[in-house]
Length: 113
Length: 111
Image 1: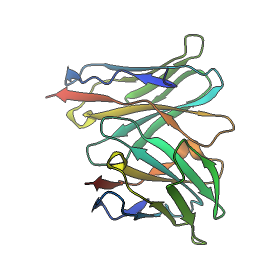
Image 2: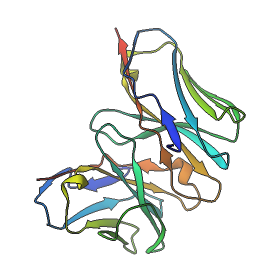
Image 3: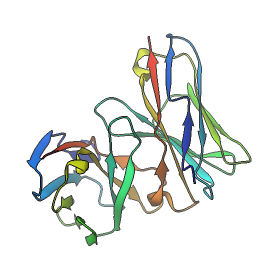
Image 4: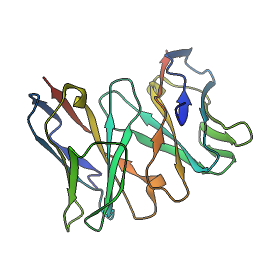
């Protein structure tokens, strides 16, 4: 079992650009959540996808959007990148209703210059 | 006030010591309390979770929740250098899916 896989592992973008991050959930999981972790901070919830729909959203602007595909994999898109968007982006997968037992990927390190 | 407060450390203890990590939370509606371990450049790994209050033990790790004082603790017995990591406490409400994390405590176990 490969667990939760994220790609790419590292990314450098310029202010104003757009970025897409990808996540494949653990086998048997149907729910994907995205988190942003700034340096020295705990992860912050961005949103959760289940059945290809956004089910819950944290306090993030509309520049952050996502998508879930029929195979449960997911993408996180960030438009008009700001320097403050530099962070580790984490994907977590779980079975529906079992969010307490979510498994995290190793993350994508995004640097905005 | 943050929903989950955690001392960032760093905390350094000798190998074999008992480690105590603590968090406080502000919302009494929280039902699930979790502890994650995060090694450098890795994603968080769930260590254990408790529902409501009380103790839960798993090997060298014990999680404790005191709802009257809104206090969450993780104890590590016989600490090992491999326990050196950042420890994140977290909570989840009974109806909400999102997990709210503390800022993490950096722990170092000296051989």
